[in-house]
Length: 161
View 1 (cartoon, rainbow, N blue to C red):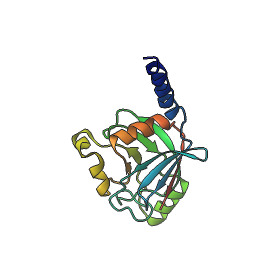
View 2 (cartoon, rainbow, N blue to C red):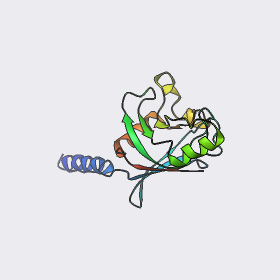
View 3 (cartoon, helix red, strand yellow):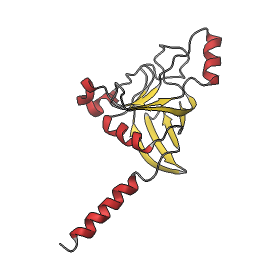
View 4 (tube, rainbow, N blue to C red):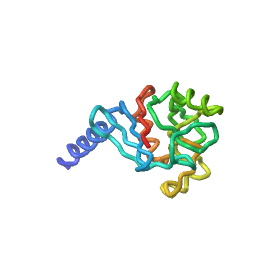
């Protein structure tokens, strides 16, 4: 009994410490299908992802099924998302708008990091076997809950090929 109380206190401190750090960078590596949260130089979380249904190359036009590449920020946290929870990415940036204008098409928008919709939540990690989004970055519902807690609005997002 004497050891039980200190053990519980230690576990409480460990769990508080897990979420005491917050991300200042989200690195998305499309080719590795991985999202990593950083606080300074330290990786504080890494998660497998699914991408847009046409994952190769940078997003250029609305509806092309591609996930953007470049530098962005988390613009909004949506607790009422149709996809469990979502973090809005500030796509398109100036470079994206310029490129789509040159191509003669709208750039699109509403690029998010999100979980699964309620009717597919049973799929859990199975959804990671294919790239299925319209250009968003999808993770499991459990992973988006952790990412949500660790990521404030205005966090930098770097999406690499």
